[in-house]
Length: 323
Image 1 (cartoon, rainbow, N blue to C red):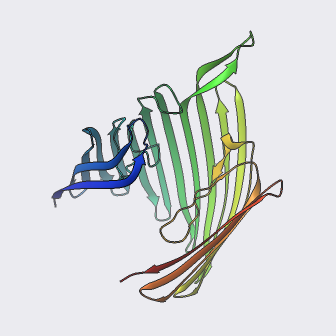
Image 2: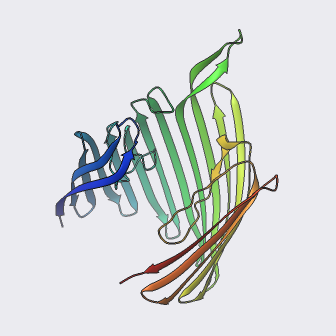
Image 3: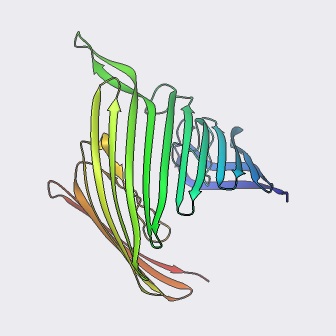
């Protein structure tokens, strides 16, 4: 059965002070419009969007997804964001996080349900930043390769193994044979692996244990680094309206270049992604309570301690009311 639809949107955002964004001149009003469409068939889907920001700077995104066999899915996604495109509310897929500009790329992914309890997935992403940025004065090329295995070894226990390799052009300063400092183009490699075990030993208790490691290498400097991270998660559904989540982790890396990230939950509406480097430990606890269907109270307390004994903590308390 075929079905399709098209939608249009327009955003006009005003600011009370000048906004400085990449290579754009200062502005206090952002205007972005887009035209998006979807076409769904029985075993395939085609999606796309054309957008323009103030000044006529365009961005395009088109994707194709298909189930080529009963247990085999394929995805192809192409993107092109001009250097001066700006969207105050758009976070399209890309390698630069929430910076949706100055990027071209092609993403291809596969997923295979190899059995009732086994899933294999992989993707390849080739990307290019065609115009110089504030930190790199030349066009950058890069590639990312990812592979993952999910295996349900018991009804309440899942093992995940993943590997990621990312390479991108960088600029480094080296000292030549005559003692002169000069800038050279190099390729920076970052490879990481993670093994994760998720289990539910009781109806209201969840436990997640995982270990991650990273290797980095710079072609020009011929410099290699490594790091590792161990995480233990425990969540307890105390009551249908109350939840307690605790995490303890230990990390060690050679420097900031070999940093690791742990994607940690937070209170509703926020997201924490602290980079972990050097040597230390980190913990946090989250508690949430919803006494009524329209009211939820949540809080988070976290602390990071490095090998020198330096402590940095943070606390957040939030009350959500829905009418």
